[in-house]
Length: 213
Image 1 (cartoon, one colour):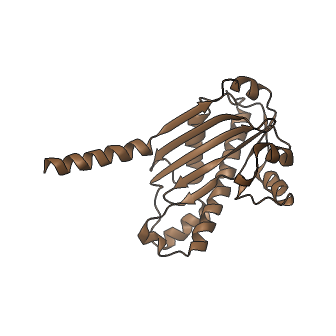
Image 2 (cartoon, rainbow, N blue to C red):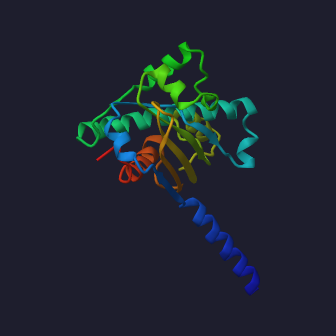
Image 3 (cartoon, rainbow, N blue to C red):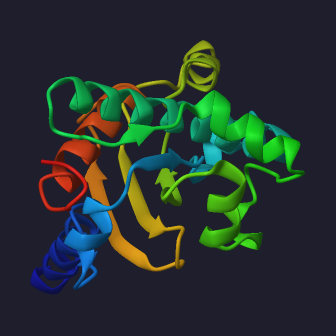
């Protein structure tokens, strides 16, 4: 009985460790990169909604893929809104390109906004005409965007996000250098929608990066 209890305890501790993981990399010359950055574009994060087996049965593979794309655009807007609020408070001096402008420029250039790994930061920066791009991945156990969340609610699933992991990269587009990498795992209950969760993530990361005060 003691062995079983110990196993459950170790599993719980391991899960808690993953959920609260935080990793941060900051380039040695990050302050110089940030001080010369005038424009930033937030790209759609590659987003995956990892539903449980009993939830997956209610959706087709195509719907699951679309769910991730919808979440990605919602998160992109949430991050943009956060930067605008930060700018109003004097905590950010640069210009942040609107998601509509970013996505339109990429599409006009023939770029799939949900498959950006095929392009270098320099190539993306040239298309978008910005000094820095924010890109990365986002995984969540439940959708947070309006349409997807509403769909699950109709099925009686809904509820707050159980967990989410964000891996965010800040690339300087002038030389392709990775200036900041931020990996954060968050337990559920911190927010009922993407804006709440993005606010939590951005508040944590911007305390420790040179782009914001």
